[in-house]
Image (tube, rainbow, N blue to C red; front, side, top):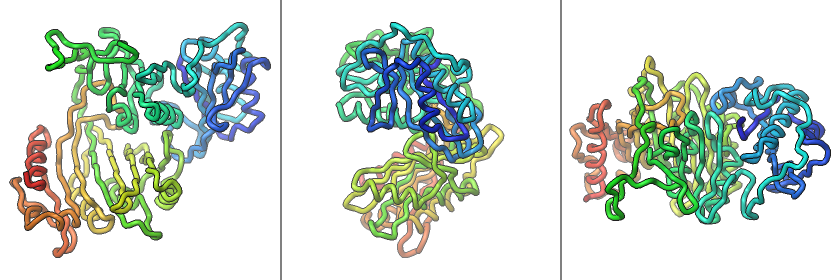
Length: 472
């Protein structure tokens, strides 16, 4: 049975409904709170948590339950309430399931996964206790060592939920890595991939043949000295480290699915009239014909897309950075992460965006020049890189090898072109001349990569271009 159970309800679970859910272990179960009351915990007789329940979240974006759970949700808006059971305690998993089943029954809706919420009856927990938890641990963490915080997940997609984000922040503040352990069928949301890409954080995938391996690199892993670490290959030395690679990681096939990926940065003057997110929306409209569907500071994305509300949030948090995830409609999978930072140069927006296409769908490559011009002339583009990748249409990250994308174009903003000495930006080591975007007196430059999108020669072109622009 899964460790996480989620109630998807048409009505907000009111305090009485939540209380009925919390009585799933009987009236003698202890109740505690965490995170300024945002998390309610059912505890054993020693006060150690058996089940942690997040505050209900109102989701106003369609398709998020399907994307993250593979479940059918009530019509939007609906309420998303998560219950996480303590790992390794069967009664805790039953408690979480009964809690979610009671919420779904009283507030109208369903529970995920269905098999975890079959009973409304009180769960017998007499004599059940939980192993002591280190005082510094947060509710989401299953194992805490001096090097890493380990989280065990059994969900179709590991998403950047509020509690996983809190676990990552707590680990980072303590100088620890975050290692997420999943079964082989699980995928990652692109938002989580970036969190787990830096050592000692890892995506640890359970595997029948090799035990465990890193879902992003394929390295075979073992639990060593308080963390999951790579196993050295025969002949490996400290001066020439070589890791074993799991066989499962290399079992890939070309399905014909592709992703069009764009990474761009804009720098805006810090003034009262600034509205963030305009460049992202412009790109979305150019490539899909519609704006983004929703956004949020965690997954599921729960708010309808609104550049003004996003700007207001960034303003409230300044000078601290603001991070958000932005999603599209189920008909055209799209996902972006946006980071807003206040710097001496102004307000910087960093956007990583991808759209998914099936084998029978064409990515709109003919629109890329127009996208670049809109960003350069209206949204203070600094730079942009466009790639085409062999990857899943649904944008989920599998524990399999996904090769690097092929660079299709690089764009240099007008201010960056002007800052380079002489005509260096207009000269190019590439076969094709750059395309001028915007006013002739202050153009941005679009550098098409002449390499064949079916191979990796575009990376060599991009490397030569970067060396040229840097003057090295």
